[in-house]
Length: 64
Image 1 (cartoon, helix red, strand yellow):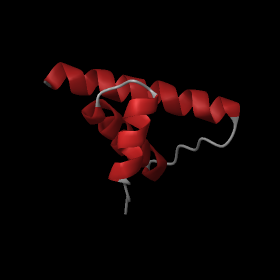
Image 2 (image 1 turned 45 degrees about the horizontal axis):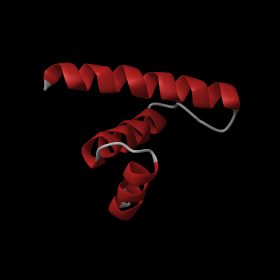
Image 3 (image 1 turned 180 degrees about the vertical axis):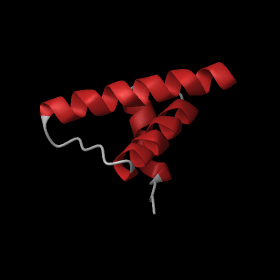
Image 4 (image 1 turned 180 degrees about the horizontal axis):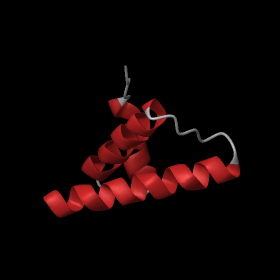
């Protein structure tokens, strides 16, 4: 299961100056990547996770 705090997504979208929908998509993709075995505890893992998030967000934007 993936639990998403809508309040946290809203806070993040304000803090990072992104649209709510974009931040929600990132959080959803982040959770799916964890299900796929990706971790983000070390700097290298975090960089890889962010790269995979960005790749997935790019693909998602091509659908819209």
